[in-house]
Length: 331
Image (cartoon, rainbow, N blue to C red; front, top):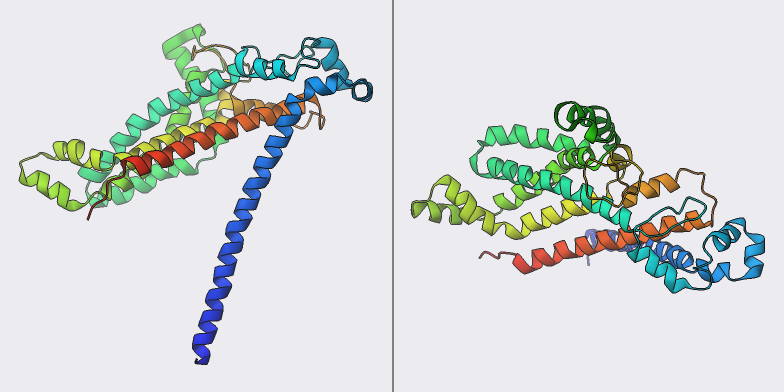
């Protein structure tokens, strides 16, 4: 075997090993994150058992406070699990803490639903326009300009919602009925942030629909609108659905916009004019550095984080399933 061939094969083996190491590193980091979340979440749900141990209670002031203010949970971890998933009061940072996470879940779903209601219709309209109606020169200019929205820091979006959108809605539409921090303004601005994701991914999958399908529809007398609606959209359905689910997952995981514009009040409400707190906003609230390590409040952070991780994982898995189920294969 010649020396150049040996060197080339050695480089290929080295690159293959590097790629494999990178893949293993990503898996290891993911496994470490999941492990930490699961371990700390389990410690949160073990709080009633720890509060029943006199030796631990004597050493830790937070456990003593927990045992004094929540004697109904001491020694009964199943009650904490039931309260976490079924009750509607969330106040773990107060002395007599309540641990019903449903207000955070409802706040997250409310802001995410508003964002998706804005991003999906406008994003699909933009994608159809760019894919089927815009000239190539227009598309080459408009699509990069649209994608610039994805590069704006989310904290800028948050201050924009807080200092411009909310005052505008208060002055022109809702008046004093709208709170200074509310779900509506946060959801609207978050929908604008998600526009590039929906529009860009949808436009890419629409342009991947074979040209022959369009030409066959035109040959049968279809108009451009009929081709776009009855041929291209059904042909790109799996990719469009995946883009919408990814947008929803991105909305659920958004932090700064909701922390600034939606507030940090865990209200049990579906009124978009009132302040709400999302799962990510609570994580920001607890992560500011004032929470002692290992305390009750600290452990709630990981319980909420685990719930958020599971929710986004389910949505991402659902998007993969949708792509596999409705994918169109063209010969």
